[in-house]
Length: 432
Image 1 (cartoon, rainbow, N blue to C red):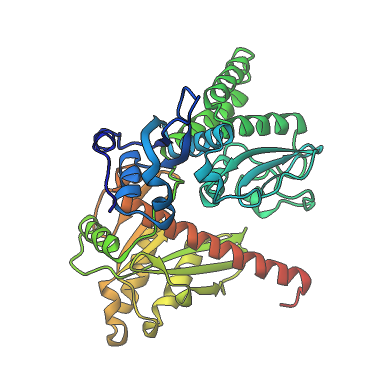
Image 2: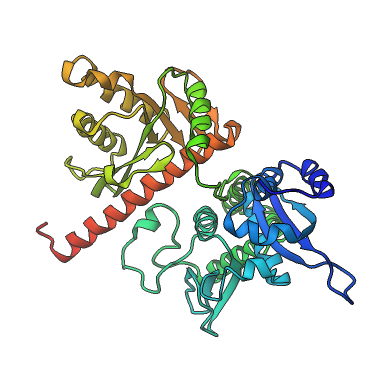
C-alpha cells in the first residue's frame, strides 16, 4: 500500500462505482496553464480500479503513482464505450505512462480494407494506405470481445476469399454471405467504424431514420430488420462485459467462490469448474470441448476434446448429451463441483439427465454432487439446477459474471479451434 495525499484520498472516496475512464495528472510543467494526463485507464468500476493503483500497486503503478496530483474521470454508459473512449483519449493526449509500456508494435488497431468487399481484422501495424485504421486500443482481449459482439449486428468478412458455399460464420449470422449487397455491406461497415470511434448516437440516429423510411414506404419487413438491429445494438452497448478484471489471486478466489456457493445453493467448496461447448456446421465435423478452471484460473492440462460419434445431424442437444455422457464415464479425471453448459433450460435438463444415468452406480456415485448450471446467451440468463427461475446475467455479482463468461468464452474458443482442425483435415483427406 502506498501513502496517499489526503486530497487524492478524498477524490478517490467520491469516485463513482460505474464503468468509465479515469485520468491521472501530474503537476503542470512551468509555463503551462493546464496539467496533462500521465496515465489513462478504463474500468468496470472506476472507484475500485483507481483505488487498486494505490492499495495493491504493481511495479508499473509504483513508477507513476507518486507523481499524481489530480484524478479525473468520465462516466460511460457501458464497458464498450469505456474501451472506445480510452482509445480516443490516449490518441489525443499520448500520456507518457501509457506510451512508455506500449511501443508502436504493441498497440491494437481495427483495420478495415478499402477493397470491393472490405475485410475487418485486428493488427499491430499501420502499414497500408489502402486500409482504414481505428485505434489505438490498449487491451487486445477487450477489443476482440467487442468486435465479436458487434459482428452480430454488422456482419463482416475476415478473409478476402470466401468459399462458394456458406461458411461457418454464415451459419452463425456473422458473415455477409457469398453474394451480399455491397452497397449495404459498406454502409454497415461505416456504422461499425463509427461505433469504434465513439459515435454511438450517430449510428442509432441513422438506423432510426432508415427504419422510418422503410416504414413510410410500407416496406415493413425491412423496417423490422432495422428495428431488430437497433435493439441488438442497444443491448450490446448497454449490457456487454468486455473489460478484463485483474487476475484472480488466491484470496480473491476464496471470496468469489463463497459468493458463488451462496448463489448456487451449495455447501461444498468450489475448487473445480468444467465448461462445455459443441461446434459443428449443420451436424458435420461436429466436436465438443471441455475446459477446466481450478481456483478461478484455467488448467489447460485437463482440457478435453471430443469428436462427436453420432450421425451427421444438426442436433446440438443430442451432441451435448453424447459429450457429457462420455465425460461422466471417466471418474479418474476427477469430477468437478460445478459443470457449466452453454445453453438454456433444454441444455440444463440434458446435463442433469446425463448425470442421473451415473449416480446409481457405485463407481460413479461422486457425480451426484456436481451442480449443473447453464448460460443462455441469447436471453442473457443463468439457469441453476434445483432453482425454478433463472437469474438475469446483469443481476449477477461482477466477480461471478466474470468467471462464468470467461469460462464460456474459453470453451467456445477451444471448440471452434478443434472444429477448424477437424474440418481442415477432412477437406485435405476425405477418408478421415
